[in-house]
Image (tube, rainbow, N blue to C red):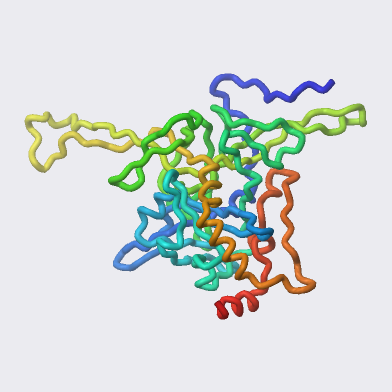
Length: 366
């Protein structure tokens, strides 16, 4: 009898082995930008992160850009910065283009259909983009039941689980193309109660979130957060004498990064007695300090928004507006994953296989 695989024991505080971050995770990420006046000129500045999710609609796989709702609500005019084969391109969006959740920090932008700014602006994005399918989502009860772990026990997310997320590093976003960074952390508390969170600088709301120990800061909002799950598979032993277990890792989406907690510490001016301070000297100064604790909106909140009735209806309209696949042309095939990243859908090869001329002719008719 082959014993169950158990991860190796580690000393308290010992850094576990972290699985290499699959480059596919980076290829699902886009930047969200805001126009700002810098040096008497208007510049488009990256302020947040988004990622592409693939949704099956009536047998057609369509993509939607997902991000944190507060990025959309706190930015005057949001544009999406995409990699193209010739560099990057900023695509202006209107507030009405975005779907927003009323109960969670989630917003979504369709890549296809009547509300898509990418179709309005005739965008040709990079061939390298991919999308994350629902098959990688952790369920509402924080258990993974998708196809990525063949033969493995259905795992449940837990405190201490290793995480990785990919997003904008605003001090170095990339010169010729979007170049997101990967950061790491671990779950400090499972979603268990409503937590008061900022919606705007003057408004708050309550939501159920993961608390995560990680170094999150400005620009990471909207980043996809993956659980680096460790499991085992059986392989022939050397020499063919039986089977042996080999550890494997899979990256499963637990949600999107929404923000972090700051603590406002009071700093005193020690060199000048309080009685001698003049009006030109600062008195007690409050300084914001990152606590190292972030909060992550669960993946189920993303699924709920993307499956909301009005969002589904608009996707149906998008499918109805697509030209039929020409005879002899490629047909989209949705493949359930045999490994953790076969659930990623290639945008240009899987989300929409329609010749450009036919698409433009169809748009002119509508």
